[in-house]
Length: 304
Image: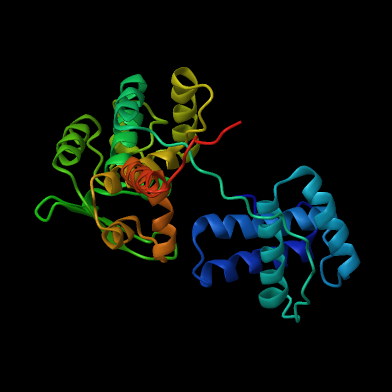
């Protein structure tokens, strides 16, 4: 992570302090990077003079930012600057009225079990093939699968310990027998003492020397290439494997509260969103709709 802007000692001092406060606050690494990046970007915009920015100046900044970045970036920069003001400058933060983009809830593309088979078969690099299978078979987020270690695998209790996940929470997820056998065989190939999925940057034969897990970008690129070959018009990502897993479990009748715990959702409402993707619920709804409509009397008599 770039930690300084050249030639601005005072700003650099405040920036380093900002990064320290972020880490001490216990934020996830992704959030620390995002809030640090926000201050670098805002510092560049205002020539590193952030001490006394007016509301009008900030409105100009966020207006210009939105022209080239997403609403999510606008939100992260706003929160990053608020943290900087509160913890580094120790100033009272004044609310900035922003008109936010309305939330649009889109139905995600999911894969059938047969399509998961196709995706795995089309993934040529074994590291990514095992990674995709593992992520799907336990409903893991991308970061959760990346950070899996050998010690997280409990073969005796057939479960996996997911550590420091979203919301800084741990949980256990069921470990399917086939996943355990697959991971054991994969370990025979890579033999890394810590990471289940060690980085491939030094090649196949010395993966045990690598001190980092698989790179997020490499995984996403691999997924994109496979999906582009198989389903060019589908919006499938690594997270789609998690969506598919949840939908498939609900199709098999798993309890919604049990699924909530497996996925690590704070709210049951988040888990309940998957119910509208299941074929069973759709079929049941169609049957009930037909039963009701069939009970309504409709006659063609008397037409002219």
